Length: 112
Image (tube, rainbow, N blue to C red; front, side, top):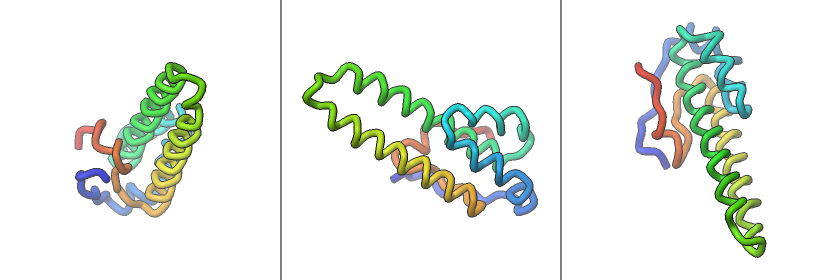
């Protein structure tokens, strides 16, 4: 679990940019809030969480390609973990929360 505390955002910012925050967790779509809602601290927070998730997905992809075939079950487990993180991020964004993702959420943070 991340030791980073939950961030509280302006309620008007949250309501206006909730959709941008939600799509931040859908693979490379984290770029959309970075470009379209760059003045929103809420959208930027979730875009950085989405970027962290995207980078973790790339790292997991490289690692599993290097593993021997008999450890391929590990790929399924890691992919499931990444899916759970994406779902947690989407739920947090949809609820207007600024909760970092467990394990990886503290790696990249936008300037506040």
